[in-house]
Image 1 (tube, rainbow, N blue to C red):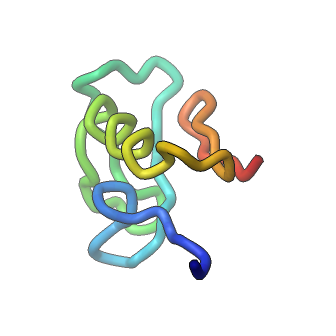
Image 2: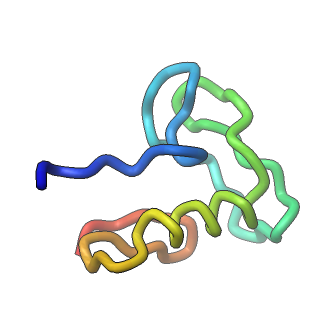
Length: 71
């Protein structure tokens, strides 16, 4: 299987990056925008759910304090 890229709700449909502007005090319904172009990506709760759904069964990525990191 080739390299997988995180996508779905996590990637910005406007500029095709995965860069989120996440406030330190983000809660489930906090609106999250792309840090590259400012486009609305979704609410923090749904973005976290999408990340965990995509990362399920893999140990390549982790989500810590709003940062997606490669393990």
